[in-house]
Image 1 (cartoon, rainbow, N blue to C red):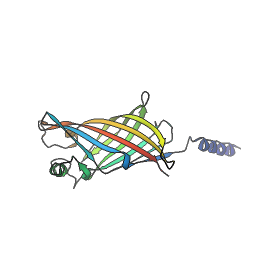
Image 2: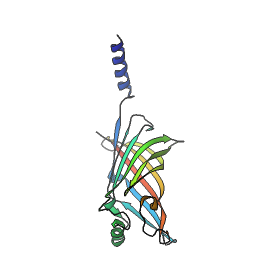
Image 3: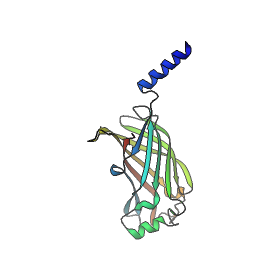
Image 4: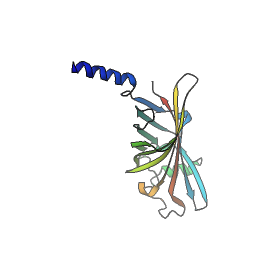
Length: 191
């Protein structure tokens, strides 16, 4: 009788979605990974990474149990100035031949107020992994013309590049130490 009870309970939980996990994949056509850094103390240089991939798995409707994994192809850096991009790929900055990817793995995703969340996790750049906290805004959900479910987020973070061994101009006089990261993500429910 106990086995029958637990079997019935398990089926009810699966049917109610309690155990159901949903996987979401980044939609690269509607997402972007951007950064801004101050230059010479007077101007700002924007840039982005053209290639990235991420997944989010969650069973709760508010995503508070989400597990997020994200990778960025550092070689895809683009500041719209080819000589500068080549310099950023060199050992002075990202050393892409040795460290081709940046990675983020979440440790928690907490709802704060309204559509605001706090995303904590470990960010790896080059040979350094450090805990970080993103400010996140949930943009909502919708379905595209084919009925595919999509969700959107904005994520914001400020890091000190020297913490990740990106040590060119360590004084920060020419290239600032602080980097603002802004990520705009649209996820599609995996089929």
